[in-house]
Length: 338
Ligand SMILES: N[C@@H](CCC(=O)N[C@@H](CS)C(=O)NCC(=O)O)C(=O)O
Image 1: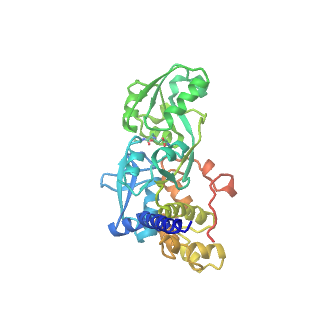
Image 2: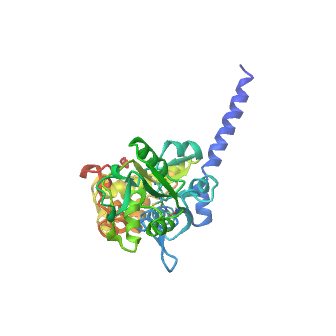
Image 3: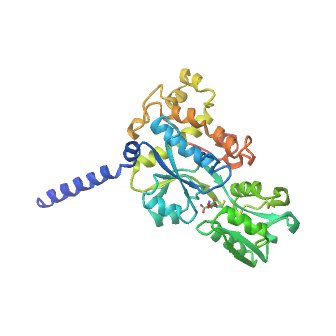
């Protein structure tokens, strides 16, 4: 038994060292002076690069929010555009610090790649886009369709489940990007496109004649989309997780980029904890006391980010739906800062 003690101690030290060594992502990002964020190759509303090389979108704003929390500067981000098939390997192989690319949280992905989803920024579900000329009312009438879909997505196994469960025949047309999917659809090589409903809103806007196509009302899956990190760094996981929660809590507390100055003077305890005039909740994660203020000043609260990029104030015009706050008919709910 006595002999065991040094062994146990040595083991504990070794484990202690490895845990410390693994909490490196924040330091790596700080030393580099920028965050490396994996994003979509090009999806309107979520991640798109303009002619001047500027990225924007819902997922891009999440990268900017993280950079704001860390550097107090949302521009300190290097964007790495990734296809559906590349994204999780890029994260696993440390080519990026975080993945913010309309990615669905599934058990298999966390198991296969040593990655972990840090929350849900957008509750989505899979749907179908068809030419209005097909005169369809429901996805149950899609028997015999030629289906355009991207490999490396949850979309493909989902639609196959749906067609097979409902005894419908299909032909799969694989396309590696949204741009290729649109080309194929417009050339008549497929007569239905399927992906997350948010993606279909974006795709429809990019068609030559958006009003000639419609999204069928059926939603056939759960697609909780969120940012992803590696499983080896709890501190980094917590930073990414709480940046998302801060934006949701800010909306719930009525704190926006426009009301920040008032919020900094507020006497409401929950507002004070959010903006750091009471407590120092960022400290254990290596963040400043005003980390959430930095985020809200840079990108706004959850509602501002949603509305600007994909919601009421954007060309996609997607209703909040499930992404309304929990106390307003939706399911967006953030644990409290306290
Ligand atoms: N949420 C699904 C689908 C994600 C996905 O890659 N969707 C496609 C269709 S909207 C996309 O973003 N394509 C953009 C591209 O061309 O890279 C998943 O995680 O597998």
